[in-house]
Length: 399
Image 1 (cartoon, rainbow, N blue to C red):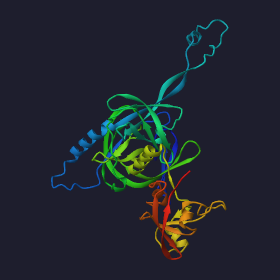
Image 2: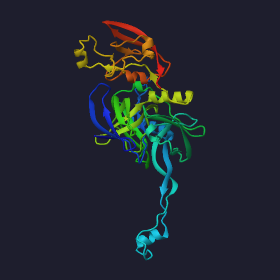
Image 3: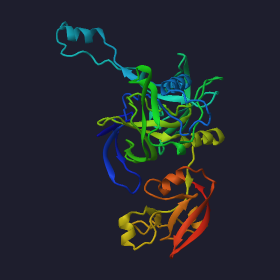
Image 4: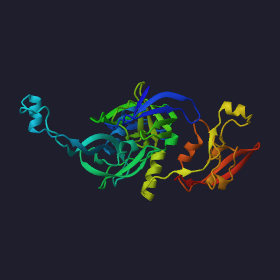
């Protein structure tokens, strides 16, 4: 099975950290960074005594609300263009002067050309746009945003985050139609979802419908530069996603963003993935406040507990993250001077809960940390020497 994003870079889809590896190959389309968007149903039931509108009406209302805020992102850069000389044409016409076996070399002319495209969506009336990092990863390219009313705006990339595959752009102007964020922690399996975007970088405002088919997926990807990009906590959906839709919003039927679409399974029956909206909102808040995206830092090495690990170590707990050193002497379990050391975490401790949430395969410690910002004060529940211990840590900033 293959998964397509936007650059012809191979990726591998994994289960949640510590789980089994799924045989999935992901692609990021380099020659064409296409764009798409998503819409999903709300997670809460109406409290009104009035009858719930039929699904068709709710879908139409959500699409009408979302479409004006979804944008196309065009990528352009200087590329070499070869200009044919008269001798070049004579060569192919068979009329070169006597004694010439090949046309003279003509140096290329650099000209600006569109080399790809992607999707994004407005999250402020002042022109702030969210998209995938892989859509705007080329720092030498120029980016242009096309809004739903057909207007064109030069765009500036404010921040890129390869670790979460998020990026934020800015266009000049006011009173743009923007989307609000829903709580991605509240979405449920089986929610109705719709995809709205520019399929194949050609068919704008394409709408497809499906459900949320999985939660807390982990994607591990070759980032094309020799490193690995891991995305945890992704939302899985079976709504039809087409090349050209990366960076579009996944929203509920109330028109609120619950995710941003980043990957699709090509050799399968409609399996796509979106980043949770809570991460997108947190990144946007950081960009607005600090002009950059930051990540929280705890400072431990750990293994998520599995049944084999529990049996091997004869543990009496059923979940958690075992704080353990690496294979080398320079890989301590707790990094010196880290927030974890200052909080009193020790090697062989088992972190049972982080901010009141159990640590498990479906909710790993790294996922929990990602959902917090530097400076957050977080309660921990630790298992040490057969006893539960309550600690508190002030998260640092990952450098």
